[in-house]
Amino acid sequence: MAKNSILINVDELWLKGGNRPRLMKVLKDHVKDVFKAYNTSSKFENSNQRFLVTINDELTEEVMSALKKVPGIYSIIPAALMEKDNELSAIWPAVDREVESWGEDFTTFKVEGHRTDKQFPKNSMEIERLVGAYVLKKYDGKLKVDVHRPEHRLDIKILRDEIAVSSRKELAIGGLPWGTSGHLITMLSGGFDSPVASYLMSKRGCKQSFIFFYAYPFVGDEVKDKIFELTKVLGQYQAFSKLYIVPFGEVQKKVSGICEEKYRTILFRKMMVETSNLLADRVRAQAILTGDALGQVSSQTIGNISLIDDASKRPIFRPLMGMNKRDIIKLSEEIGTHDISTIPHDDACSLFAPKNPVIKPDKKYWHRFEEENDLTPILTEALDQVEVYQVNVRGELTKA
Image (cartoon, helix red, strand yellow):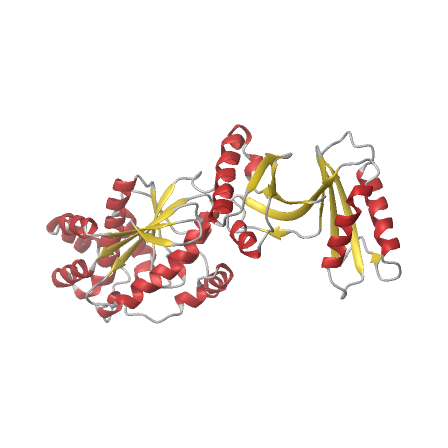
């Protein structure tokens, strides 16, 4: 009798030498959390640098979609586990089910045999010939073998105790397991850029705490609702995360009243970075993440970015720095944030925006402003009033 299973192939972990066992454990725990979140019982075992997961339930597309968002997984192969016998006769019912699942609109296939158990008496080529001959005979006249460009592939893996039969392979996010590359404060906005930046750093194994600067009373609840929806998507690429909504309207009002108009936008950005650093102090994050792309807006010129970097106690990661807007939008479509980002919302930065924002800042003015205006108390006060939401692996938010 066949057992439902999934073969989970890791991505970069096999390169990690002595750190591999620790990374494998982190990834395994994340995958277990996914199964638990979707009420799917599972049993794990390691199989030649991959996970073999036996499940007692049907594998739903919802669970498959969730697994594909787990950093560190390269591919997911749903498979039927069959009794191991030297003649392969026990696997024919599973082979039949796989072939029949392909439908009728195809003519070519290929068998790929793999032996984890090198003691199995048949080598890979013999396995391929035997299974291929069975399929050709069973579906006489309907199918033919194409080893170069087949429409379907039938995969037969000889494992230690069983034989896995599969024909479907889904690629996942890849990269490194969640949290193994450190903890970031992700400065989230309602546009295309910061969600894409978050996704890219999720692939690099970064745990993220999301921060949003809510300019109430100058904007309405629509923008906060939009951030909730973006966080629901981004949270699915994390094992666990939090969203911090910082009331920032009074900070922007204060800055606008004491600076030259053309410096407003960049000084708003400075205050956001400083507040992100204050949050990082509290949650022990190691770096700040933004969606900056060079030259995209006035605050993202080299001169302005340099001054912003000087204002941060921590490294600022900018994974989109060399990307074109078109490429960013395309990636937002792939990860599921595009349609949310297109929802219109009020923007306090635009409300306070100068007619001619500074492109090449005067460092003397900048440093004089810093010396004369210590805004740490007002930033700390804003952070003390933060709203905190927990985000689980399904992307569901609950107020902390």
